[in-house]
Amino acid sequence: MIRHASLALLVAAAVPLSAQSLMYRSANLGGTWVVDPGVVQFNFIHRFYVGPGPYHTVVNDPTFTFATGIARNVAVGTQFATHSFLIEQGSASQSSTETQLYARWRMWGGPEGTEGLHLSVTPAYNFLAKSADGELGADWTTGPLTLQGAARVAGKPLGQSGARAAFGGGVVARVNHFVALSADVGSFVSPTVRAAWSAALNVVIPGSPHTFSLEVSNALTSTIQGNSIGQSQRLYGFEFTIPIHLKRFGPWFHGTPRPAAVGDVSAPVATTVRLAAYKFGTDTVKISVGQAVRWVNNDPVEHTITFEGEEPGSPLIAPKGSFIHRFGKAGTYSYHCTPHPFMKGVVIVK
Ligand SMILES: [Cu+2]
Image 1 (cartoon, protein in one colour):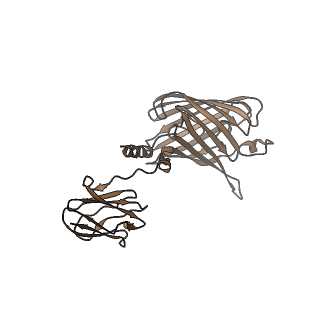
Image 2 (cartoon, rainbow, N blue to C red):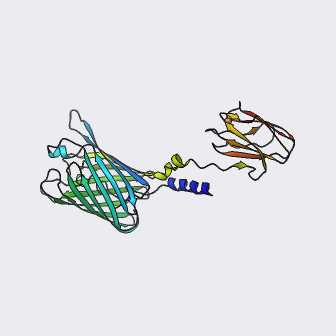
Image 3 (cartoon, rainbow, N blue to C red):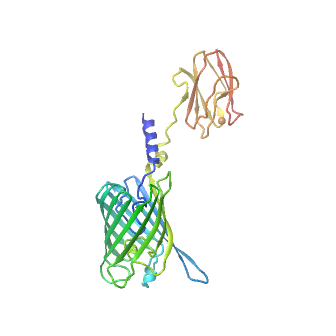
C-alpha cells in the first residue's frame, strides 16, 4: 500500500504543471504568481547586447531568479543580475552585480492560469541600490487574454534622487496551449528616466513543466527597479523557467520503491535465490513438485531467469525486483541470464 502511494506521488510529481509559465506573464512584469511550497523555482533570463562595429562585441546580461513557497500563497526569493544598469547610470558603486531579495503574497484570486482577477504584493530589498522597494501586481485573465498591471515604489532608486513611484502594464495573448505573444512597458514617474519595454514570443515545452520565451527588450535586469528603467540599447534574449519539485528527490532520502514481484506471485515459495555481483547466489536449488522458487535481484542492473528448455522464464527483473516461478513437473531445469549468459543456475524438482 505504501509502495503504491509513493509510486503515485512520483508520478504526480512528474506531471507537467503550468507553474510560473510565461503563458501568463510578459517579460518585464513579475506577474502575480506565487510558487507552491515544496517547489523551487529557477528562472533564468539572458539578454544579449550586440555592440557597434567594427567589433560587434556581444555582452550577455543574465538575471537569475530563485524562489520557493513557504506557505500557501506566500513565497520568498531572490533575483541576481550580473550586470546592472548601474554602470549606465554612472554611479560610483564598486559592484556591477545587482541582488534583490523579495517576498510575495498572493492576496486575491486562484492559482496562475485561472480566470478572473489576481492580486499580489511583493516587498523587496535591492542590495545594490540599498533601497526598500515594492510592487503591487494585478492581472486579469479571460480566455486567451491576460492583462497585467503593476504599481511600484523604490525607496532609493539607482541614479535618481528620493523615493519614486513606477508603473507597468502588459498583455499576454495565447495563440493556443503552447504559444503566446506578450508585450509590456514600465516606467518611473520621472522625466529623466527612459521607460522599459519588452516584446516576446512565449512557448510551453511540450511534455515538460518548462516555458521558454524569445525576447526583445531595453531592460537590463529583472528586478523591480530594472523592470522600470530602459537602456538606450536594444537587447535580444530569452527566458527559461524551471520548477523543481522537491518530491522528485524523495528517492535520495527514502530509497526507491521496490518494484512489484512478477511471475507466479501467489505460489508457495520454497526457496529464494539472490542475484548479486552478476551471480546467482545459489547455483543449484532443490524443491518439490508444485513449489516455487523466488529470485530477488540485489544487483544495480537488470537480469533475467531464462530456462534452457521450454519452461517459460522471466522478463527483465529490475534492481530490487523479484520473480517467482512455480514448477508443476519433476525435472532438472537449467537456466541462465540473457544479458549475462555466464550467469548460470539449476533448479531440481522432485
Ligand atoms: Cu544478468
